[in-house]
Image 1 (cartoon, rainbow, N blue to C red):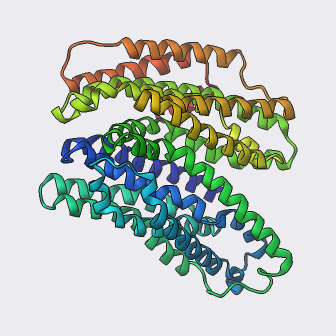
Image 2 (cartoon, rainbow, N blue to C red; image 1 turned 30 degrees about the vertical axis):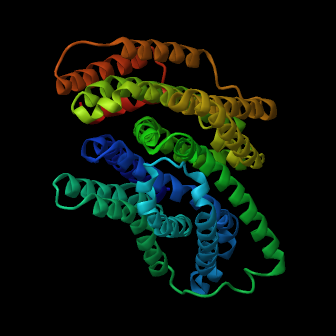
Image 3 (tube, helix red, strand yellow; image 1 turned 90 degrees about the vertical axis):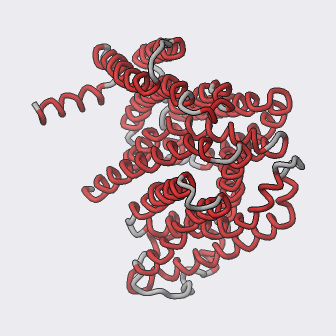
Length: 492
């Protein structure tokens, strides 16, 4: 248990550091890039390559979850599960290459700015290759209880590499072409390094054994591949459909603006990811013991805690975004679209306020419903984005995401309520909701004349003290109060 806690803490710290660095680079890129289309190019390279990854990893992570515990054996090289993963990766890579080569152009608009994309489109191939390899080899490393390496490589090291590339380009030591090459390379390095790590940590590398490929096991493997592909495909659509459809229906300039606001809003989710990782372990054990009260407690606390954290970060982000955009003239094109941050952040806040519902469903006997919900979410995102982008352009894409997330989270709540009578929205949640609404209203209307850096410092300090002071006084989160009491005992 001590190993799990230590790795969870390290993972959280690295995730936060990497996401913070990545978010900062996204906000700084408009200053140094030669045009909005150049910023859009980076966003579309990321989205294009990533949209293939989860689908064409061919469900290997699902295979590992189901089979690795039974076939774990150092002396027998874990029955060749490593080589099986590489084999499935190569098949998925080949298929994705073929699909992209023949159909990739259909996803693009014919605007002149896409000449820029076509100039660098060959980079999609190595990015797909190494990102699929990373996803599968990271899953293998996790089954060896090596959870830190993947987080470090993908969340932190790659962001450091991007920051290094930005510095080189900003200092005029490299051209824009070489910057794009380095940017693409940052997505390839984690896959290359974790492959080496996986081989080093496997005492005996062998081909898949007869036991692993026995007829009785093959049927399960095929099912896991299909299940994993459906989850991966729907997940990729949800994350990247708005960016891809903006590229097709508007332009790379639109993608540039949207991607900056999107990554700024996604920063709100960082603490939630840590909560979900920890909650999954507790929930899995609770379901195993048929301990519904623990599940209920985790569900209720997660809704309140994530609502408070999400509202705080959304409000704080809004008060900081304006001063940041005032720092450079190149932000003038982005500043009028600041409201997209609020819309996208509101959708994320709704997702957070519904707690760890996905983790509860995923660890219960109704785990397949997560796949059904993901498919429904993907369909909603495609349909809503098509009509909303057509009518309202960038605003439509942001609103479509919020509507889709709200609908699917309602049905997740309904499933847990119907099947287990779980209802997390109590009086404490209502008080937290009123506080959150009041805080967001204050942040929205807060405005005064001051130097940008002074304004950022004052907003960060004053709003943090105000919000969490009220949370403590109103006793909205016992976890926060306990943590503060522990810190008081430790340091005072």
